[in-house]
Length: 356
Image (cartoon, rainbow, N blue to C red; front, top):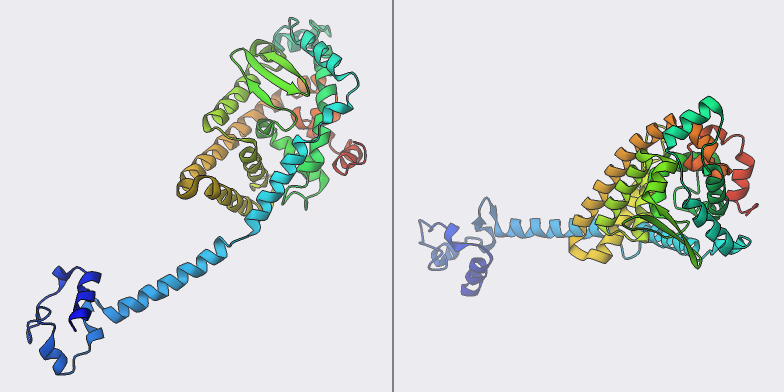
């Protein structure tokens, strides 16, 4: 009885026990009451007996073990998504699409030369060109060469992106519309080539060379508004120290998020949330929820800026229609979704590796 009483005292705060009015227990081990037939398991701790409390704890433990098995099994759908995304990313990074460009090194040198020429501001160029039809600088040649080179990169990774979980099932037309809508966050993933920000602008690494674009040139070419929004997103990304794997998972979540014009199944979005959660648990352990909160805030930031950016891009559709000459640049980057039907055969060929 002494051992049983010790066990009770070790399991609960003995200060809450009131003396028994019959035998003055628990100080004497309830000996008189036990001798009269009192049940040792019916002694109450709070509102419930020790036996009832033990049964409740056992049921709670069983429920927790079942939930854990369903949400975070040893290997799950979340692991499949992570594996699929990282495999696609690896294929994109290993594709070496620049080898298909004739005299690639010479073309990069020429693009750098063009980028150092003087441009008038985007708004001034639009005003003068609309009134007189005169081109005040060499931006046509510069943008033409830029699109010619990077169009191949876009065509290279589009079929791979179409293989992301949840995107395989949608039509080719809806997939391109989705990328057009998400162009703002699409650029952050930097799938075509690594892009690094410096004090003067950005540097895009291609093969053994790189293209340097000053911030001033970018603003004259694409306008202050677009460049400022791009830089704001890049700064936010750099503050979070996101790597490419995390960026691709976040971008996939963004693509699968149900919005007004793209009412896809919420289940796809939930699958990516679970995949990102699983990934963060592996990397950050018990503190993963802090990172997950940061990533959800980053997604909210992208959604807000995307809406603002898409409205701004709509106002400059005529300019982008003139600036971008290649089909994928016009549709995805220029926001010219009205050209999708016209280019549908080419788009399907690209997505199914028939023309690349």
